[in-house]
Image 1: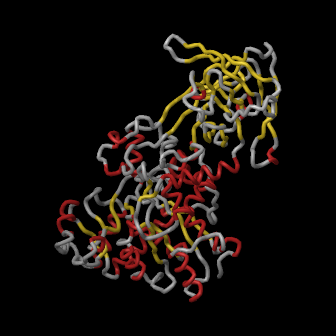
Image 2 (image 1 turned 90 degrees about the vertical axis):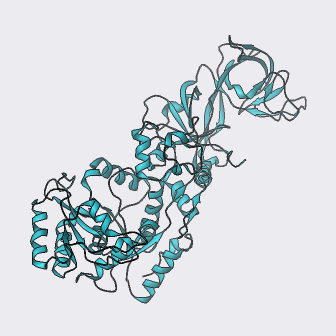
Image 3 (image 1 turned 135 degrees about the vertical axis):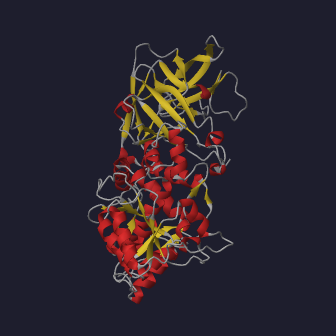
Length: 557
């Protein structure tokens, strides 16, 4: 099997692809089968997106397939809500899994049979040590463990005890099934790991059929083997656990062969200014530090989607950071660059005034509304033009006016200074009014009616351009301006996440948009000219726009 030629020149090589190429050329495997195996105990985040892109993308590139399998072995923490959200996220990212969605629970009967096989071979036993005793017997990194007093229970007795576990004959925590491996191993995970424990929780797929559940390390390798996975790709924290993975498959008759699955580890994504732990993300949600799993400040796929990130930008990000075995922190600017570059190409242009003050053109006819033409995208004429409106009263951004121009390089509006209104006329400010707090509320100006689409006839050069929205046609909108959720680039090191929260991670503004934005679709990206990229919020019925990213990177400056 060869790599899909259409994609081969677009994908950078990495150590995983080198391994796959060797396996295919040697004949070890004739095809490539991967899997994405999330636990349905939370929402997916950008780190999972990296894994999705790797597993599904690799399968696509080699004309193979990728399974979506839920490793649902812990019913106490799992929920159908998470199952459905994960399926939606994978679809939204642009990937299709092979066949039907799969669950580890589909194989519970087979897992049990394989556990029985290990018991019959004298390689597993039922242990009645308490959790504290088990930890004590396991030893430390410096001291070897000692054998459980139940380690040498006769095989027939173990078979009977394991059957009794399956039939609900023991209480939760009373006993477990352990692998008989090596209590003196330098790898803690190999010191007789637990394979099964008693749980009476109802399961979202199997209801109350089972009261024993396999541990992740036992189920994961078996799920891969049953499905014929060729390359089991996971993150570095499972590196030591590969020894359990291999040990189990080596000692089962069905899988002790050269083409059984093999686990390969890559570095997980550590992204600056956020946390990438489901547990810590859940703390943010439960502590009301964010509005929910889909809060646009969250690194969850649903949060990024709500903020305006696109599947293409996330795939591009995954490609930019690449795959390696080196753990490091990734600059969040790389993620922001991916979405900025993508939206620059696809996002229609429009105007919005986020911090409005009124601009009155005193020499413009009253009650006259002019319809002008503006390009939807300056680099893509095929997108056509849009109608904008112009009248005597407009809204401009308060940051675009100063009473006195600070220097000759100032390109915004000031008293006795000219500026062009974008896609419209040149105006000159004459005077202004302030509100009761002393803040500028209204600027009065005059316009040059001969400057639509051309420079003033007297030859003066007008360098400044500001945006506007015509007052009578404008639509009231709320703008949610997002910044990084944490002030520290490594917030995970804080025990109390609330102490690391950026108090200005969200700012809400009330302003105005062009009337066409009333029809803006949720999640669709727009460039608000001179302001940044925004999308309509997918949870609000009103006109609410979330800022996706600025027009340029301001953090690195």
